[in-house]
Image (cartoon, rainbow, N blue to C red; front, side, top):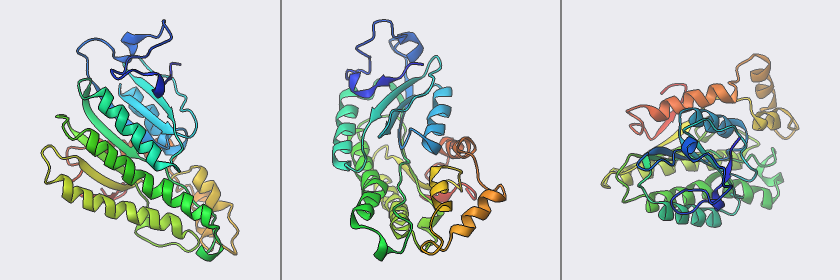
Length: 279
């Protein structure tokens, strides 16, 4: 398994070590181009599954998470694991922009940012959730995607290849749920961010295509958190228990296949806010 830390790459993307790193397997042949995909929340769940499937397609994947993203890398693909706390979104955005500016467009056939990371704060009425918990949920779930997207669009503005921004939203951005106000607010903000960005990018030469996508209900750690909540504080707990017991949850791999299929469609961006179940 070859996983190279992002911080150990030079501006051209060529690792400085170890000496026996298999460069030809990672697309370092002169003149070769690759599809660049940057994914947040990439160390588990849907993010990890998307990384795995994109690597299988030969992409260069920059995996941005608090913990390392560890996956086998097939020949022709590349995985750069970047440990970054998205509760510090200004630092994350500066790092992303600096790296993109230093790397430049020459290696890439396309560039895509997938804002996947999200946090569910304490499942309880808003008045009963600590302020620090609420602040963290909004920083990771909305401020980080906004700042990372801004950095991505600015750094790649002159790049001539297709550019895409995918925001992983939720049906809860469109249907409120008691006991999870911060998550609903973050996802609703993400949807409207996509609408505004789509209008802005439509006015730009080679503007990026932007979509905020509800990926369906997925059997992840977040679902475990919802099913384990105190029913006195989170009245929708029974609904999530029923989804699990009736087999209505997609696995992360199943959800990733659906999300990436939509991302690859020629009409990606036609509807800036959509749902994988109806797109």
